[in-house]
Image (cartoon, rainbow, N blue to C red):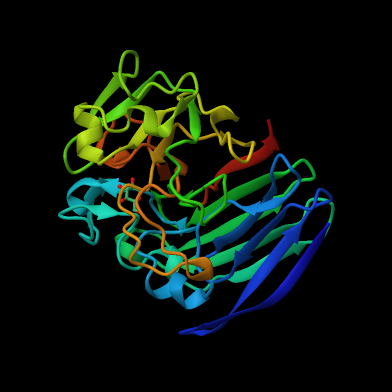
Length: 351
Ligand code: BGC
């Protein structure tokens, strides 16, 4: 219904802006050209009060300088880990930053989430939207191909935030982008998400080693604390003596949500306290459930809040981690000149 543009603050390359989209229901989503990040997401709770359900910062410089925990981040070119920080494509070997032990995490030290994007388009209609665009040159972060990457945030009249990615490169390359927002359905500064109930529509997850690199094995969730086919509180089984949970320090695993790559609901989360239910739809094969196990409260977030362990939960839709080194997984390779097109939505209602 409307888009309000304001100055967000200073970053190293100039002034970052904040774009606040609002729909008829009063829901708002604030995004910035600094990193194409999602900054605020105000959603009505069961009493009709608006709650900001994503973790973040008050200044754009924090997104640029201290956001090693990826609050609200647009991750690219590749989300999650690439084992040994190397891969082979069309017979050529490529080397990436080792920024997570000997592995590559979220594309290394020069992630898209730390860059200034330009605004390519804005639509101030009933479904307000903002499109950010980034030029990512050949060998940027170690990936082949000159790429043009676009991310469109749109807010629908029925309280869905849609995130659409459109990327194209002049050489075959990897595109596996995701959004790393941490959701807390009681509000960004309201404690842990352990009482939140989660449902993930997946029978299997990718087994990973102690470095969180998939072994290639797809393990049945049946009979394990990984089974979220029915709603379970996050805190119910997170401390169970189960190897995968020990390796991840909690939930930090990739679910096989959508091998057929349809557009469908892949997960839901609800909070009994606020009554807010979030529904995630995607057209990608995997989704990382990350329960903020590594949040340490060391960064100052919105309103001076320090986000501690498990105060937000991420639903990162993507190809499976390290897919490029696992030919048995669906490949995140995009051919030269073809468009990588994918959409994830986070929809909200009260229950
Ligand atoms: C990964 C975690 C990592 C986190 C960084 C998640 O996508 O799965 O292992 O620690 O990102 O914020």
